[in-house]
Length: 434
View 1 (tube, rainbow, N blue to C red):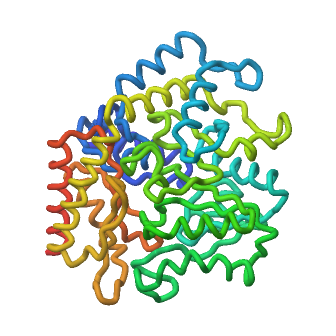
View 2: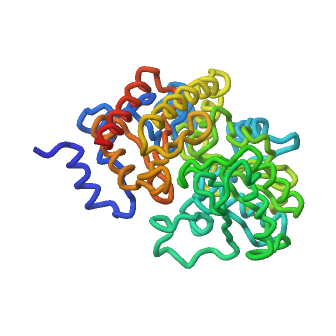
View 3: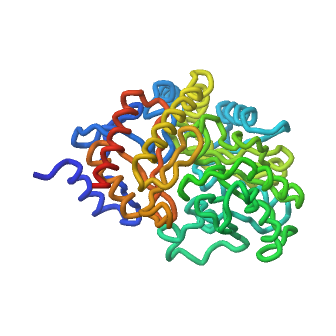
């Protein structure tokens, strides 16, 4: 007998291009907090969070109420034609929350890729320079420019060239697999110093508008730089008049226990981009930066028809209230402590776990077939996510080799739900080993 999920998948395969991957065969009909219900009535624990979108949980009552209230008033006017208060309120709030003791301005977009693309536009306009430097293992989006800045070729770039010009990539601080063959802390984070050499061999500093970087690389495998890395990178950028753009699309909005992950490093970027969990599931992104940079573009040079939609703005204001005033940031810190302790214990028990890394509850397990050679266990990671799904846990892999297991569960997950999910993960690791 064909299940409802199978029926829907048949329709999907007939009417939707195969290029849009589905990581599970479950069609969701309802979701609350950290629990999803599929079309066959099966309950799933969500450790994926819509790829980092549901930090405040599915259908948080305050987010739903804000959206409903706004929908009863008006849905769209286009901010460029008839502005509205919620856009300005949200911009002011993000300007207040972003690091940096200087005046800031914020513009809104629809997606993380759109935010990153606008950040580059603004940086190029302000510096009158063309080049942008990103990093190996980086992911910044699927538009022409952001795809060009993205590192991994397959599936994100294969067959989609030619790519945008004046985009360059340099090695990142991947200490577990150091591209320079060095060891931390003896290396003193010299990978950041390499930027000076990069100016000699790849693109001149005088031609470089911006360096764009994720505080913790998301799709790249939750790669987390050492404490001194960003300070050194920031100093090199400042020395050469290069703007530092920090991509907080996946790492922001409480994912690491802070509104912005870069706060863990104490750095004040010139521009920060936000999206994903910013509006609790509504399509919204933000570009927040130094006022003297953000305000240079000529009138009409920035924007978009749907950018900063009023429903999404109201949802985002509710999200920030939940994170800050309702104590969800503190919950995130506690959740991160619990996860780290549990993952380190799993690492002691299972040889396949080569490294545990991340910040707060933004944590990952890098799976390897041999801890000495660090041979990536990509097939095993794929099998592990499948085993977890079969037991009722939705979990995602990532990384260049597909061998990194990442957790992006809603921060509102209950202790009981968390324990159930972690138990399924360990049972699946045990099954993988046997």
